[in-house]
Length: 625
Image (tube, rainbow, N blue to C red; front, top):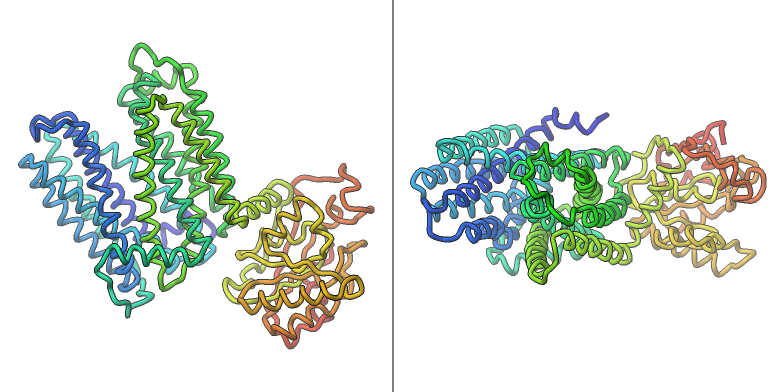
């Protein structure tokens, strides 16, 4: 698959994408149409104040996420997800038919019930939506698939919100809203019929009818993998952060920018398009792998653009209400729009890899229930964010000041998460190295197994060889490395964070060598990837030296497959010993140096003799060192 966009034309993704897009569109069409009708025509419906009804509608829609997410996760693990999607689309058609009666008879509480039922529909579709992707897409397609889903969801939210407002404001709005919701629901069902089977991972699962105990169980499944759970917390924080901004856009546009209703649409569209572009760029920037190094990059952008939005916001709004075109022509507006687009753009970089990481590293049998736990946490954080925003505004903060506080909190949360899981920051450093210093060409990466133990052996050209291999690998690697490299500040952090194993020669320190070999064997026994440079030192002439017996010693304890890797293009860089000591000639630094990494087919442990491995690596490296 040469492009993520081509996924839309495949049966294993296209029908599902259409189904989820139409579902998100319909939810927001109905919800916004109802809010508009209640805001401008509330006297025909009830004596309750419109502001209270709008908040009530938001609460009614999100309540099912707390009540039924645990049950939804169980069903998605127990039954075929394609079949569940079709049943949910039929359920949606029934809901909008009932809603049509509510609109016709101006029956407020019947419509609120339908909104609650649509919330149930979305709650049950959530685990299906994210757990089905790893069943139909390969690991290389997972980032692109998630990017399309996230971009499509936000575009559907924008279009549905706009359509709901336009139809509600048209003549005979009740009829047009009902007809549109029914047409979209029917189209969603037709799309769902094309979704290929997605067999249940745990068909013998016994359903727990108690949502409270099952919620606790689901959170327990998520907590079993620390990285997965912290990814869920990161996603939940993003939804808090994003929802806080989204909720303020109408008031911000009116009271800070001095805009009209059309200006609100401009602000919302700019933010949404930013998320769409950021999501779609993820595949290109990640090299079609789950690149969690983009997560710190995303958090930096969320903080910087959030702070600049607070600073760029005008102190005094325009004395005359400005439509969208007039607002764009107003001095300073472009900076605000760039900030809004930037928040959305870096939000896409932040959230897409986290969703893909959860799907990839979750236990297959519990994946849908872990997604359900994520949905519950998202809802909790969003409610918490709404309460915090209300508290800050009540305390006298302006909306721009609140944006600034949120951006600073985002920085604090990011630092906290990256301290708990250094792998995120490590991958960011590796990603920066490969994308700002080198142009990395990768071949044969599919030979590195996605699960299970393997020993990676490679020629040693420079001090950054391990970082380059980490950037290419779909999984973390624990390298056995010379203990002296841990003296370098940045490299020391990177290698310690990755669990690198320091080693010394037997002549220098026999105890350190034996300890290193023992740690490598333990890591392999635990199903991890271990990397080693069998030459024992960085080359001084660009050629591959003799391979020492360290690989044999490791394989005697752990007879795992061996992946030979050949690196070329790093000889002559400032991190190599070409021309003398490392970094002795900084003027030789050449940005975007082309580096090639070729991985060979796995070799059985019993044939992986040092000289045989050396010849394999030499062939993979080619003539150019």
